[in-house]
Every structure is written in C-alpha cells, then in structure tokens.
Amino acid sequence: MTREYTTYLAEKFLREYRLFPVEKRLAFDAWADRQGFDPDVKRRLWREVKSISRRKAA
Image (cartoon, rainbow, N blue to C red; front, side, top):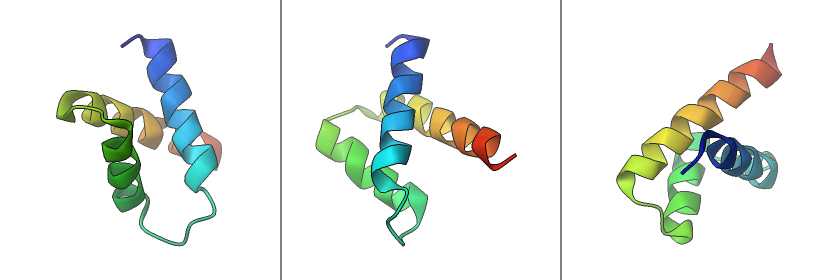
C-alpha cells in the first residue's frame, strides 16, 4: 500500500466518522474490519489517522 493511498484512506475515515460520539479507535477498528484490512495495514492506517488528527488539531 503506497503512502498516498494510506493517507487517502486515513482522511476518508476521519471524514466519515468525525461526527460519531464514540471513541475514535473503536470506530476505526470497526471501519477497518469492514474494509477487510489485515492487521499490518490497520496499524499503518491508524498511525496515519493519528498523524492527520494531530495536524488538523494544531
């Protein structure tokens, strides 16, 4: 999975789940499971989600 695609998927998750009042990691796990990602891909995507979230919060 390329870095650009990882960033795209992380941003897609953040757009889709930004209004849900649940813990973001729990929502991410459910979303990634529905997408069928394996554990390695989920870990890389979660790191990207956290990185994008920190940049947007700053």
